[in-house]
Image (cartoon, rainbow, N blue to C red; front, side, top):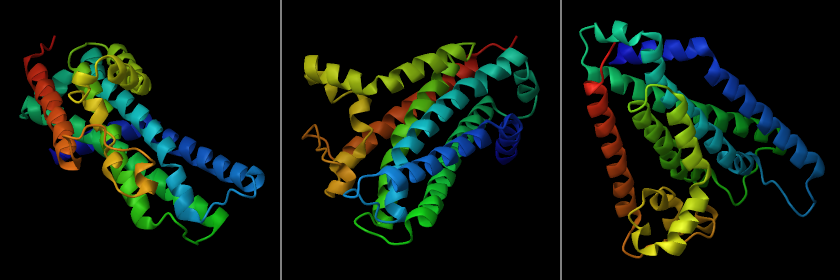
Length: 258
């Protein structure tokens, strides 16, 4: 498994897409710091590097999710399109092992982008705004980052399943990105017209920060469903991850290699 993951990272390294994304995020963070430093109103104060990093988590999460969806959509389909899947399957490895080495690579690449970008934001914030800490502590920063992990990883997992259904990467990419970008609208429509089934839709449970008592973390959000707690919502989301991965495994094992 480890050698397969190393092989996948070598492929990712050759494409340079992850490095390009890291550079883009660093440039955006630098631009944000400069704009805030020069043009922010006097009444709005950036209380040190941790607050600056916390302000960038949303942007990092969005770009990391899009990157993860793109990577998950292509990692399987390109192997079939190029015919390189045959070279993988003739090795004495189970199909499940090959499949999950690709999935783990996708997850690790996403986490790498998130962590490096967050550390970069902290460094930029330290240079620009100093080392003071205000209301946003390092613990709050880590918790805010942790709360964003599930949504960041969920949509690439969906794209990974779709990539095992379709033979081209375009459809998994477009379908997953479509639902990712209209998630807020879909939740609003479902809650308005089908509130009874809303609690059974995973999108309503991805943002676990609503269960946090700290206003800085919950951002004013409150639990939507009284019958759910942090633990039950987390288990509900993890159950969806399990279903998506089991379905991906079943489809990949039955897929014909021409």
